[in-house]
Image (cartoon, rainbow, N blue to C red; front, side):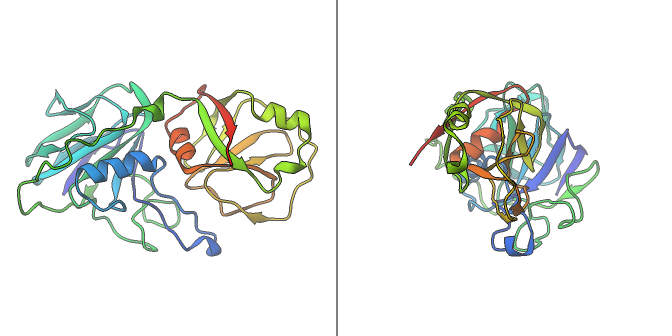
Length: 281
């Protein structure tokens, strides 16, 4: 077990999400930055869908009650084991009673704590991802016990050559495809759409709103399917980018659709971050 001493700002159990339930209005959920989550699992020889702890902005304090191995990827929050700094993106051996804590945020916005075999919290609709009204809790809480597996053998360090692609934090380019309603925009709207925007303070696991407005004279559409990465244009001209916990249908024009790599990048941004859409085939 892992005991939560302090939960941090917003820490949740996430995997690759609930696929196949969108017809029932259930969001996909899952790790916001799936490049970083998959990387941590790969370093640990876990399956890609193994559940991790997604840590947002400030980290928790965790007490490990059994031996295990961990890997922390994504945002650098200066992790420490028993008050001594540990490396990111590497296997770290954990002994019983070890304390994991975090310092200040230096790069990115979300970190991923992987453990050997993945966190073993309950499955709901084929996923361990926390989501309101689907799971009993929406984030980890103080004194909560998180079940994990005990390694039966010493962990073989066979993945030491894996290299984390840090450019996920170093580019403002958001690669996108045209959305179903893109061609309804006039030429001046399309031109403005590919100039820089800033992330607003209205951002969370459901969606990211951008600060600058795009003049909008398009009518609303019939309620239609949307997915993570869909860029909606509201009647007020706001651009809303749906993220992993976003709804499954919407009535606003869908003018762009982010590539998967762009969703991962956006998950590591925060209020004031600059971004610029780039159209790809």
